Every structure is written in C-alpha cells, then in structure tokens.
Length: 190
Ligand SMILES: CC(C)(COP(=O)(O)OP(=O)(O)OC[C@H]1O[C@@H](n2cnc3c(N)ncnc32)[C@H](O)[C@@H]1OP(=O)(O)O)[C@@H](O)C(=O)NCCC(=O)NCCS
View 1 (cartoon, protein in one colour):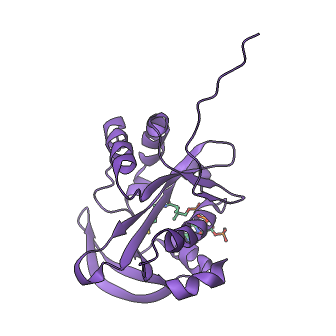
View 2 (cartoon, protein in one colour; view 1 turned 45 degrees about the horizontal axis):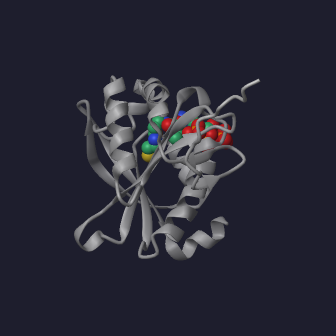
C-alpha cells in the first residue's frame, strides 16, 4: 500500500502548549481569509486590515509576508493544526528604528483559550533573540479593547500612556493605549 504523503510545513519559530507560530504558506489562504473576515477583529485593527476581508487580501498578505526579508509576519496555529490567527512586527523608522511594533489577532472561534497570551509571550522572546539591535517592542491598543490590554499586561508589557483621540476608525474617535516591553525586561517572561 502506498504511504500517505503529508505536505511539509515550515519549522515553527515559537512553540507553546497553546499554539505554535510559523511562516505562512499558500495553504493558509482560505482559512486566513475566513478567520480574518469578522468585524469583531477588524474594529481593533488598523485600516490596512480590511473588512470585508477577501481571499485576495489573504493571498496578498501571505505573499507579502513570506517574501519579506527579514520575515516578520507569521501565522498562529492551534495545537491541532488549525489556522488560529496572525502575529507580526512593524519596524519603525528614522530615530525610532530600534523600536518595533508588535501586532496580533486571533480567530473568533479560538478566543478565550489563552492563544494570544502564549503567542505574544513566545513571539516577544523570539523577537529580541532574532533581532539583537531591538531595544523595545511596543503595542498600541484602541480604546475599549480590554481583551488585548489584558493580554499585554499578563505577558509583562507595561502600560506607558494614552494618546488621547489619536485614532479615528470608521468615523469613531478613540484614544490609543500604549504598551511597551524593553529588551532587559524580556528575561522576566522566560
Ligand atoms: C485581543 C485578542 C487577540 C485576544 O485573543 P485571545 O486568544 O482570546 O486572548 P487570550 O485568551 O490569551 O486572553 C484574553 C483575555 O482577555 C479576556 N477578555 C476578552 N474580552 C474581554 C473584554 N471585553 N473585557 C475584559 N476582558 C476580556 C478574556 O476573558 C481572557 O482573559 P481570561 O483568560 O482571564 O479569561 C482577540 O480577541 C482578537 O483577535 N481581537 C481582535 C483583534 C485585536 O484586538 N488584536 C489586538 C490589537 S492590539
């Protein structure tokens, strides 16, 4: 009998008991498009994470992310292999080039299982090891996104301030809550 062939997946960059993080593959596109296509997710993301979120958006993102050098955007996968979300870094420029922003989202059907907390923790540790010049990671959270603020505080990020009325999303003006994690603080996460 012929043995079953399995498609090989990229090696995870982070493994936790709740999820693993690996490079996107073209096979993720349908599941990523379906998972991302929820207003409960896009409402707390920048406008470059659109709603509706189509297959074309997912194709573009997977292609963009996998061709980038260095690769900084990854898929979050549940322990059973189900696509569970995305996590990534946006390098800042000019004099802030040693500060990178971290962003993440989790599929609505996977919420509340600790996936974002464990992914962010593992990914933050990975980022400081992978990019030695990095001094700080920061995350920016829209007013009202209490779930994400809880994730950041639980991982060990410090709330550093609030930029009042910094955001206008679909006509709604909101404050922006700033969180940061310094390289020398990452040890307390491990
Ligand atoms: C924020 C988000 C990433 C959290 O993902 P998750 O995998 O469900 O997170 P976790 O399970 O690790 O932890 C979430 C915690 O927040 C809590 N929480 C969720 N919504 C909450 C709310 N409205 N108020 C207070 N706590 C809330 C959960 O109960 C959980 O805490 P618990 O473990 O003590 O029950 C997910 O909801 C999401 O993708 N949201 C939309 C996109 C987004 O906000 N991305 C982050 C942008 S900064």
